Length: 251
Image 1 (tube, rainbow, N blue to C red):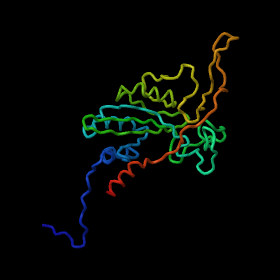
Image 2 (cartoon, one colour):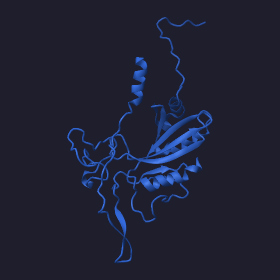
Image 3 (cartoon, rainbow, N blue to C red):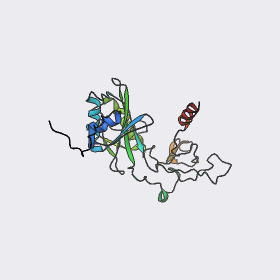
Image 4 (spheres, one colour):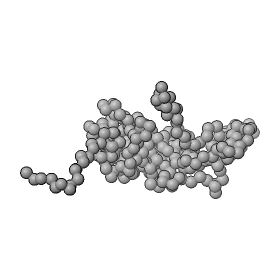
């Protein structure tokens, strides 16, 4: 029998991963950028080159078994985290009082908002559901190129996302490489631009009216609509649950 040296430190057993985020990080390793849990939701960030491999593993491996992809959407992180609402010096009149007019859709191109530090502009986000394990996970992939955002298509793994990816292509201009029929699905065939991009004018580029003199419908630059803001475009934590917990603890 070999004696343990008196001055040696005890070896601590490595704790087995318990949460879904920890198990995903332990299993997929360098294939994922991060796997975190916040507010009871699991979010996994993936590089474009690993997007399909991670999705395949999350679907096929019994420990995960995310057999359904219930949604794929696009996100534009232009001006993410920037607020356009003035909270110290505002007027008392007007629908958009307090708005400094610097938000997307209400700026001069020379003063346009920029992508925040640490973020690429466009991302594809997929919501996965495991009925077998009663779990959900959100996986996100930032496109490497802002000028031509390209993300591999998930249609080969979950065929049902076909129309979801077409919608993200139509509204955000994200190209899903490998999609069998990538074309617009909501806007018109001749529509110019992608209306959910944050630098797309809120009032649009053109308006349509019937011209009695010409006897036909004509398209012309928008002149009858003023851009306005109804909801502060800022990121805030929801404190309602913290308040409820504090009140419960006080009883």
